[in-house]
Image 1 (cartoon, one colour):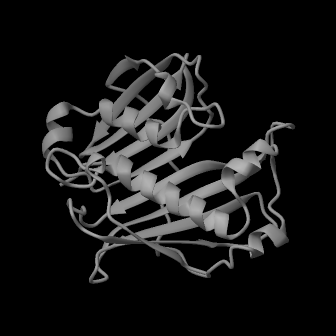
Image 2: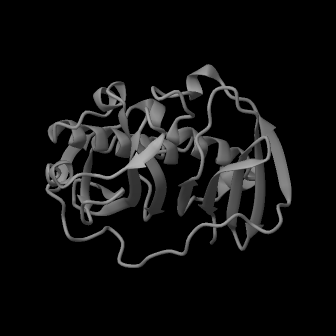
Length: 241
């Protein structure tokens, strides 16, 4: 089942040029995903309170064109794949009122038992509630993200209390916000972002001491987010022309 909503993002979702920020796109995707879960009687916060939660493992986002302020957008999401498994795939699309695809994305989630501290299998019954589709938003697969052999720049970054989510970990979107801080300002300001990928390797808690390490190759910036030298996430930002 493809779950759809129509939204008109607020002023806080746009950058100085009046275009939807990449963080706002992720927040839109997360919100529609949680609404889809609610409709499947699988509430995210309720599940977390009961000791079982969905953990986001990966993002892949491709930006064909960036929505501008004032547009009404149609947001779609659906799951695909097979159960029982320890992983579920969820895809998304943002389209304009004429059906043109602005942004498409794919994510991977695992079901996590908070009491045991382990990934748990997704039951056939739970998976079937989402009425999974058979196709993905992307035809091709991408190679696994890897940390560069050598970084060329690094900076420390301080956590704020509001960066922590209801699970007590760094919010998924904040990894992207931090990675964007590692990109040269002139690139961030003047070059359109074509897409990005995020691989979440280890959760970040409120006592973390984070360092951003960055390497660039032909307009592709790969940012490693480290907590006391332990790699927690890899973010790849595509600014290639």
